[in-house]
Image (cartoon, rainbow, N blue to C red):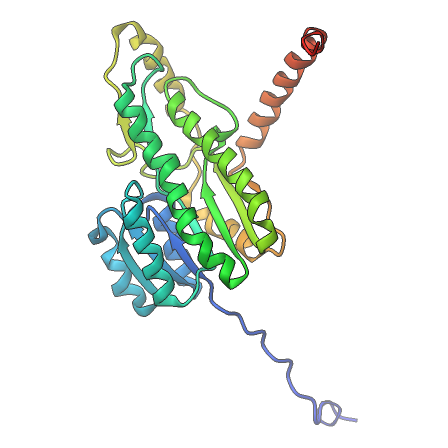
Length: 290
């Protein structure tokens, strides 16, 4: 019997229907936000892309038309956050992925940074993402699910000198998202903390890095720090979208996820040292129980 007769009457298997996901991403003017917004749009998803200066992302509309909604958003302004989230939901009809990506680094030793600079950092890196989460959750609960992504850092697990306040903001960011994950799990909402290592983004631009006035006593220490950090291998931001898509397409995405190859060995070493210290002092700790 010919192949033609054998296959007679057989219909080709239907192509699975992929429903485009709707993203809400903060900090899309540069860095990861820009890379991820464009990658999502290129794969056919829809994106509410936000930036402090909406002109910086206007070209996305020219490239991707009705699949993108560009919005001006300063995450330190809660009312503007609420309005932007509402506009995005009204425009697309749902929100599948809410990505808190906006943030910056404060460079300066613990002694050098002013209270005003520290507060400004926390307003953007901690309270801003909280405003986005609080604005989005009612919509995610009502639709019965969604995925909140938070861009932290490998420095949400370990620390470095000279950028200690930045590290502290990411530690707080991670604690908030870990608690959030337990609170929203009953509503079918996933939470993933993204922990990038060092990447060749615009992280050293004036918009992404603020400097505290320096004290001479730290000048040599900081010079050595910057010399060492300048030798660190940096990842390619363009290599990250496929990892992100694997997360948002997964049925059971992880709570934490390292981007890049260097953070996990660093964290392994750091936690081994912490455990060794805790265990060395275990008897003294136990005695303090009473």
